[in-house]
Structures are given as C-alpha cells and as structure tokens.
Amino acid sequence: MISYISGKVIKNEIGKVNYMDILIPSGIGYRVFVTSQFKFVEKDTDVFVYTSFQVREDSQTLYGFNTELERDFFEQLLTVSGIGPKLGLSILSTYSMERVKELVLEGDSKMLSKVSGLGLKGAQKIILELRGKIDFDRDDINSKSDIRLKELKEALRSLGFTGSGLEESVKRGGELLKKENMDIEDLIRKVLVQ
Image 1 (tube, rainbow, N blue to C red):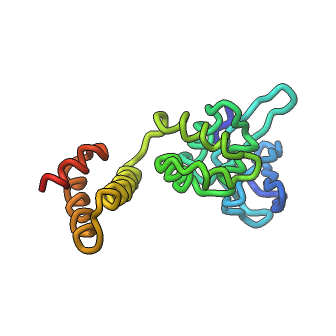
Image 2: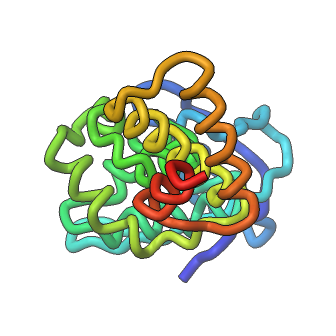
Image 3: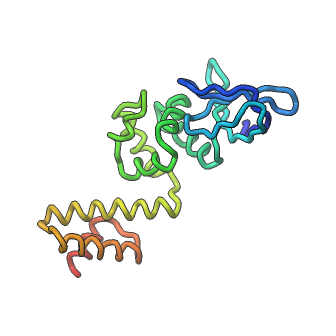
C-alpha cells in the first residue's frame, strides 16, 4: 500500500481528469489522480500527497488527497457496492468531504445524485450503506442537532404551531439538545410537555 508520496511536481493536468506527475527522490515518477478541489502546486514545487492505491484487473492507480481524513473517507466511499474509484473521486470533486457527510446524515439523496455518473439510486445506496459506518466528529454532532431542529420545526408546523410559538418551541428544543442527544420522537415529546 502506498499511503503518501513526497516529491517534486513535474506535470499538472487540470481539466476533465485532474492529475499530477510527481518525481520522488529515488528517480521514480508517479501519476496521482486528484479531485478538482485538490490544492494544486506549481511545476517544480515540492509536494506531499496522501494517496490511496487502487488495484483493478486492468490497472494500478494512485488517487491523491490534501488530508489523511479525506483519503480515508474516499476509501470509505469505495466500500459502498457499485462505487468505484473514479466515481468516488467524482463525488469528492463535486462536494467537499464535510458536505458529503452532511448529505449522508441528512439523507439528501436528491442533492447527492447531482454528482456526474451517480444517479438517484446510487446516492440512496451511499446514504444507506454509509450512515452506520461513518465516524462523525463533534462538528457532525452539531450537524445532527441542526437536522433534529429542522425535523422538530416541521413536526410542530404539522401540529399547527406558527409564528412566535413555533420559534419559541424550536428554541426550547435547541436547549434540550445541548443538554442531551435524543431522537426526534423524544425531542417532540419533551418540547410539547414543557
């Protein structure tokens, strides 16, 4: 497994396919395919790239990322059946890693399906298969709270809440979520009881 490469950029290609050719000190050059969100460096500049080495029947390819987390998330995407390296790279070219995590958390298959070559069924499969696998950090927990508050607002609207009464109830829900993480049913129940 080649987990990172450090060397001098001898060629950059930005277009339909984004890649860099990197010459390492031993004299070997590697072509590393990257996302459109990759921070490119000028030719003849030293670079350090986290890589994912993917072996297929007909190819051995390196995919490069700015951070170790992004590389690990790319590899998580590849665990979803039907998602190959090119589609994984396309997903991370269309959206940042953080945005993809948000879309998975929110279950927003419509937005995720805007990735070229993915489609609605592929997006739904990613959401279904990754929801339980991704380790969400503290920011993602805040994102979950935001989602819960949106769900709470929708539920309260359907129960007839409007205006300042609705906003007050959502604010109370936010305060409850700061104290403890709970599912939407418990949150609605506690907000209605108070």
